Image (cartoon, rainbow, N blue to C red; front, side):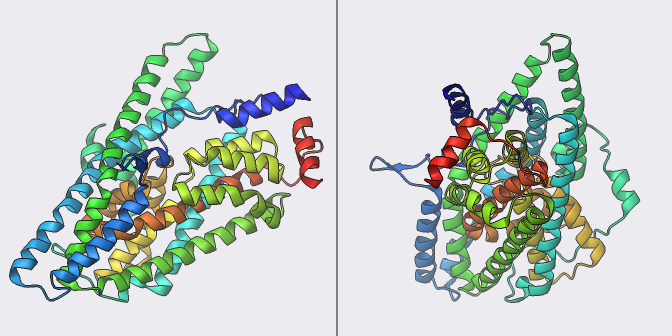
Length: 467
């Protein structure tokens, strides 16, 4: 009994979960969002990023009112344009980091994550299905509510129209880049994912062959990719630390030049996104009810701690141990199923972010007065799916990959500046959906029959809770 308890405790505390039944090890080197929120200290206390953004919003509104609030003087108007410069710089930095981040994230996940063959194929199908449904739900809500039509907003450099049409054969032809490194400069998300998946699959196969032969020639490559991945993420943390300044500048500039009218559209966008996320959560409960032995009430009880942690940290990676503990202790899943969904799935599953990106693209198109037909929205679906691959675990993944989605469908990326003002809140909401999706995957992998006998340590824990 004591031996089982010790083994189980080490598994949870270290988050390593190197389980005998599933042979899984989580990727290393992923920096969670909770670490980034420790960057700013004032009077010896850490100020979380969301509080910095809230303070920036309040100060920006006050400054915008002082400068005219929609009716500025010529001098104040020029000052307001200068205030938007930090936000433009942050967007440029995110756009520059997007392609190397996704490339390295995919390669890092393939090299550091061990997935059993049969379970891995089923896991991939479940993840792809959930992500596709999430995007379709987002597009459905955006088409019905049309939040971008509630208030017209215009920035300099508006798009004249979306010229890209859905061409299946052209899409296949353009998915192969002319040069291996060209997607890094062209921000072509489909070509980027093709290159990343090709190298990731090959490197994974070479690593497996060398491990079977007792060789370790792959280790320098794995270490190099891990170091580069962590280095790029470290640079991203510096950019994220500037987000409150960017929010202050763009909100002050917007309030000064246009008053509070643009924020009506943002309020509609928030309502639409929250509704879509709620529907995605309902879809998860339906999938759990029909595809596993777990009842929705038990699922929600087991997810309570994980969802609370996800909302407070805005990081599915930081929530991993809580998610795993809830699946084992409260839901009662098998360790292999819990580890596949909570640890492996969390590095590929990004349903909430994919939904948010698809809705953001349609929202901006509506603001610009562009009526996207079904074929054009299919482009949004495909690019959102590709952009979400490997993005889980990256801080502010939605903002990073959104630049690629906008570029792929021909939307002006400067409108992302408007979304930065509310992204800090919606990021926490979509992180909850990401975590809920991880737990759903675990339940589906566990099947329709509960395990017959618990481990002694777990059985004792359940008995003690009942007593």
